[in-house]
Structure formats: C-alpha cells, structure tokens
Image (cartoon, rainbow over all chains, first blue to last red; front, side, top):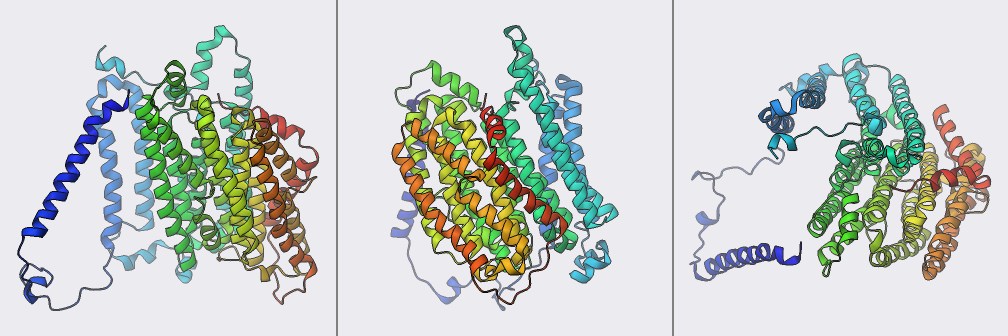
Length: 135
Length: 500
C-alpha cells in the first residue's frame, strides 16, 4: 500500500473544499444586502418574538434520550447477529446472551434508580432516608 | 470460501481475561445490589475489596500459566498460540499483561483503602464511585493485555471515561466539575489524536494487530513510510497525554487539584499504568525496528517533561499541584527507560510499579490532611504536621523521599535502573538531563518535609485517619522502604515482563 492509493481521497477532499468555499464566497459577493428590523429578528415561524428565551431548559428528556441511545445500539448488534443466526450457532447465542445481560443490567439499574420516572419530584422515593436528608 | 466459513467463532480463552471479567461483573453487581438492597457503605467497600482480591488471585493464576507457557516446546506450538493469543489474537496472555494487572490491582486496592472516606461522604453515589473505579481498572488492564489497536483504544476509552466521571463525582463542588470538564475535553482530544494515529498506522501497514504490523514491516521495505511515521508519532502523543508527559501535561495539575481528594491518587496512578503499558506494547511489539525514528521523539518528550515538571513544581504552593508537576517529571523519567527499547521493559515496569504505589500513598496522606471530598491542598495545612499527626507526617516523608529517589528507597533503584538502560542505549545526554532534573526535584520534596517537621504548627486539628487509610499508607511506605533495601525479587519479576 503506498501513498498513491490515497490520491483519489486527496482529490476528493480538495474538490469538496473548493466547492464549498466557492459557494460561500459567490453568495457573499453577489447577494444583495438590505437588512431591516424584521429581517434580522429571530425566526419563530412568522410569529413576532415576545419574550426572551428561558435561561434554563428542563432536561427531563435527557435521561430518556440517553437510554434510547443505549438500546438503539443494542439493536444494531442484535440485528447483525440475527442475520447470521444459523452460521453462528450456539457461540452466537452465548455471545449475545452475555451482551444482552449487561444491557438488561443497565435497564434494571436505571429503573430502580428512578431514571424512568417521568416526574422528577418522585425520584426522592428511590432514595434512602439518609440520602434524602443529604440531598 | 463462503461467507459462513469466514464466520468461524474465535478461540475463547477465559483465563486470559479472567481478572477483567471479575472486575466488570463485580462493578455491575455492586450497582444492582446497591439499588435493590441499599446495603451499608462499609459492606459495599468490603465487597469491592473482595472483588479486587479475587481479580488479583486470577492474575496470580495467569502468572503461573505464563510461566508454563514460556517453557513450551516446538510441538506444543498450536497449544501455545491458543492459550497466549485467544479471541483471534485480540487478547494476549504474556508476562507484560500479567505484570500490568499486578500493578493495576495493587493500585486499585490501595486507592480504595486510602480514599475510603470519600466514598463515605458520597452518600447514595458511593456505589457509583466504586463501580466506576472497578470499571476504569478493567479498561486500563485491557490496554495492558491487548495486541490489537482497536482493543487498546476500547480499553483506553473505558478507563478514561470512568476517570472523567470520577473527577467530577463530588458534583456539588464547582472545582470538581471544573476538573471533570477539563479532563474530559482534553482527554477526548487526546483520544482522537490516538485513534487518528491508529488509522494512519493501519493505512501504512494494512493491519491493526501489533504482531501482524511487526511481521508486515519486517517483510517489506517501505520506501515512503510517511503515513506510518505520522501514525506512530500521533499514537505516542495520545499516550503522552494519558501519562501526563510534557508538552501534553497541562490538564494534570488542574485535575489533580480539583478532583475529590480521595480518588486523585488512584486516578493519577491508573492512567499512568494504562498509558505506559499500551505505549510499551505498541512501540516494542509493533515497531522495534523503528527505534531510530521514535527513539529521539520519545527522548525529546522525556527531557522536556523532566525539566519542565521539576522546575515548575518548585514554585507550587498547592501540594496537589506540586504532585501533579512531579508526576510530569516522573513520566519523563519513565520515558527515559522507554528510549532503550525492549531491553528497558523490566526497568520501566519496576519504575511504574514503585512510583504508582508512592503516588497513591502520597495522595492518601493529602486526603487525610485536607479532606477526601475537597479540592486543593495548600502547603500551609502541612506546617508542623509532625506535631499534629506524627503518623501522617512520617509516612508522607517516606513516600516523598521515595519519589525523590533517595538511596535505600525504591525510588532510587527505579531511577538507577532507567538511567542505566538509557545510558547503555546511547542516550548519555538524556541521562545527564535526568540526573539534573532529579537534583532539582529534591528541593520541592524537601520543602514539604521541612514544612512538616521544622515549622510552627497551624491551629488546625487533623481528624485521625481511619483504619483503612492507616493500613494503606503504612503498606505504601513499607513497600517503598523494603523494595529500596531488597529490590531483587521485584526487579526479577519486572524483568520477565517483556511483551511477546
């Protein structure tokens, strides 16, 4: 394997850079600029913005999104295994069983810790008395 | 060949990864037990210690297996390959991996005992802290025991990500958060640099298995190995970050200062063992013939680390920052042994083993004096410590003198070993720089000892340390002295620890 094999890749990178650069540059040179107050206001589907955006967003979704990623990744592995189920035989079943056990362990843990409880205030019920006091 | 034939299951060798399995499963069980039964924290701690001890027992079994393997005859070759390179040679069972496990598990046990008060303070998060500790040990042990760059990277990430979280585990404290985010951002960049190096190495050699890379490079003469050379350099940089070698050290003092006191010693030691284990294996197994190329690079990093670490540590008024910069200098000393190539493996492992024990012990003292869940440790808190807490002052003195490399401590034998190797490899200038840096380093270690013994005590009572803290500090000091007087057994054990 020599550097020559990477020439197409290099050409591709240069072309991509030139194309993007040219597009940005040309639109900057030729586009008309007549800013008005309305035009430079934040776009909220055509409705006039009335209040400043909230400083802190509730992050209830954060836990769910993170858990989703874990199980999403699990599906990727299970799919690959399922498509070659017969070829892999008992070895595949064993390997996937170990893998799934660890994902299930994650589920059991977050469940018991209250991460699946939508109401954040309820999470206190998953703590011990001493921990509630500390929190 | 049909597709099904490609999919033959890999050879399985459970014994080669038994300690990692014990730690990983143990971490999962600790988390599950904690949420289900809410056990006492003392019980959780004892369970964690039992898990570490079990893993250590398996490591001893592995050591025995490696001894048997080393006497394998030619007609046992197939058996040898199946045992030494299980999982399609993703994992390797050799003396290098086993010594790495010994060091890692010793440091984990010591760190757990020395930082125990932190886990008591963590409340409901104690189990998380313990599990993260076990998981990071698992990751770094995989780094020491893999011959495949992908596996090395996975181990690096498992270990590092657990450490990022541990740095910020006292999340009420902004210093802790700051340390965690700094460590995370800089660590991610270093990981990216490392994986880019892996990609370029793959591009240059056509393999990610270190043994195969070595074979490919031995068979072919490359006229333009530029891709490969950049790859090696980037991997060295990535690992240089993990072991806090200059100029990739800027995170270390900040993280050591900000992270909770009870865990810092373990964090620093574990990252050093994992980083050096992987560096040794990558450089010595895959690129032994390129030593004329990477040797000067590593020597340059070593010289810069020693000089910068020693001089900047002189002006630190925070003990933790001082230990951070001294860690930079020590990374340089260890790299001094690395430039000697495969011949220096034993000396490098010896240095790593004794230094990480001293590091965990020293941070254990700092945590006992200034608090296990707090950040920062000004030198004022140590003034007159010999009158307020004689035991802590005495152990700290032993550990600091060991780090400084005073004769009759393990640090002296370790420094002597790596300097000898570097001198024999023709790096006389590096040894001169190293000796100079050791002399400078003496000053800042002595400064703390003088503050503890010769200055007026401040009116701050030190809470008497618990039994686990006292035991771990006594053990670390004892190891420092005993190995300093009788270094033979550990030297011969480390001497066997060269990668296959």
